[in-house]
Image 1 (cartoon, one colour):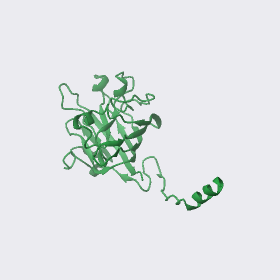
Image 2: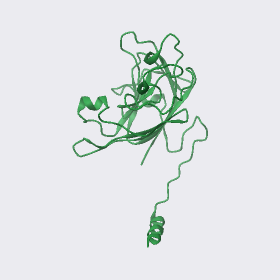
Image 3: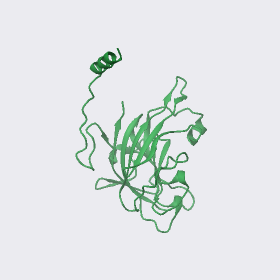
Image 4: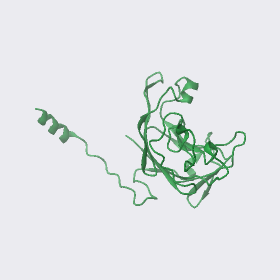
Length: 231
């Protein structure tokens, strides 16, 4: 009987749709949305203040955070980034930025090559919540990558989180977060708004780590960003 049920289930299963893989490391799958310079805005939806140079998005301190023009729920995301060489700085003052999912859950971007800092604030960390499994940082000035699978939180009718978000992330092709459940308790934004506003969809955000006393001038570069919506 079990074999019959299994055969029926297999016969009725819908055939997966076709997605053509990326033709090269600098391209994207056929169903991906490319997040080039024009796909990013300011917080209020105005054109971003970063500059475009040969396919790269170059963001200097003071240009402000940039946000994806579209909102997303669960996604697969690829982002390449280049942190500057800043020999006169250390810890959180050295190549600091951040990749935010739904504007609120931060995967840290930092120069973590021979640059000690607290473990939940280094490259590959789910900021303030989970240290990376390993330090997979390349030297500053070299291109690096994030590959992320993010499952957005599920909310009840009242807008409260019923099922927390999870994130899996690779830095430079190396697993650093393995299906980590995002903690409401550790989420500072959720503490501020009591859990409201945490329901999908939300924008992807790239951080401008500036605006505080003695903040160093940091020039962050991004390229080859793409996103796939997960069904």
